Length: 508
Ligand SMILES: Nc1nc2c(c(=O)[nH]1)N[C@H]1C(S)=C(S)[C@@H](COP(=O)(O)O)O[C@H]1N2
Ligand SMILES: [Mo]
Picture 1: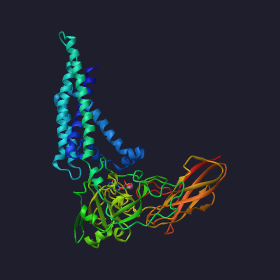
Picture 2: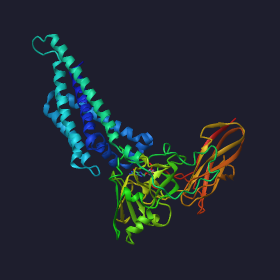
Picture 3: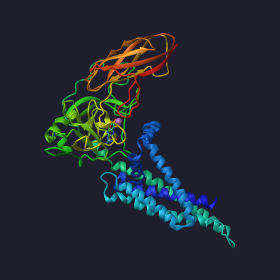
Picture 4: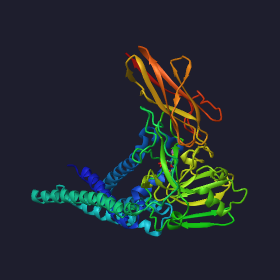
């Protein structure tokens, strides 16, 4: 093995030691203080919107794994280079590691709510990297034949062994630190606090009417396991209910802070509400319907007494993410909930444990703050929420849409009656009509299933007398305002996709 290759390996191994040690220290200082996750988080919040959109489009909901993997690969390349350069100069090595430390510390300290201790994982890991690199390089050099004079091969063998053992040890520290650190962190996490939560009693939800579920359509109620997840969090915020507080402040006469205990004592209701993501493409699955348990936010806002011109409610998450919702929408009597339960369970951590907002009729990015800890009354003219400077609309009412769930695109069917079924939604307005078109024929009315309320999606079905050949099926919905979905295709940005969903079916 050539010396430069050994040096590169030494660099990568030292970086592995650094990351492993960082994860171990982060067990005590909090998961977001780990340099890998802190730097990843800064990247997430600062990449230009088109790059982020491309990332989401290419990697889908695995975009976070892709980002962390990408960061790790970049770091490995950097470390390999540093290893080789360090052969010539200790100063270069030290400077390289210091640069890594500065980036990690700045990233960790600028995360939301970070204390000074957040710098610790990076600092300790930089120290570990320095010593690991020095040791491994020493071993790498001692495995070289000496340039001048006789070098007993036994000495070389010894150096080689020393280098390999060093590499193995470094890999061990990286693996044990990385895996062990993450495991310990999740043990410390809120899982046990969540398991201990006893949900408060609530006035019952209107029951799901018989027949709401149509055969072939997606389940009317989405299970927690199958519910889509969208957020900017690389590491799920771990918010302990025993220290959770919600502060309602800003342009209010009466600022309020409530604790978890106080929240649970408020009147609770249960409501089926269909949540949708603005990034959902036509025909996409970033939408789900759940039974939410929570307290009406309207009452809390009434108590806080917003000033008349406070037209925006900014909701903030424990990780700093935020969204802006029209105050009027939250106070117009719809079932906008500060939710603690989802389908009979405490909120899953990925869906905002312990508390999140759910607002019927608005896309999630302007209304559904997870891990919520702060509500600030302000004006749209004074504050742009997270997604607004990134090119998304400040207002995000959900657009009337519909989707064909069966047959799937590309499916094959036998000639004769074929069930076409799916969902349609226009939350808080309600759907009055769904129509299906075969090829370029006339639009035929589908049968609408009953719903709990206008705040959920509706299932529909249509019996299609299928004839042999290739066919295109299209669907469109009309809402209670009389608006029929436009056929004009539009991408999700800036305020939601439009167009008709269609599938191709081969009938034999
Ligand atoms: N804290 C936080 N809350 C958030 C987001 C986020 O990035 N961070 N994303 C929002 C978006 S864009 C959507 S669509 C919904 C998705 O909620 P879900 O993941 O429970 O389906 O959460 C909203 N709440
Ligand atoms: Mo979203």
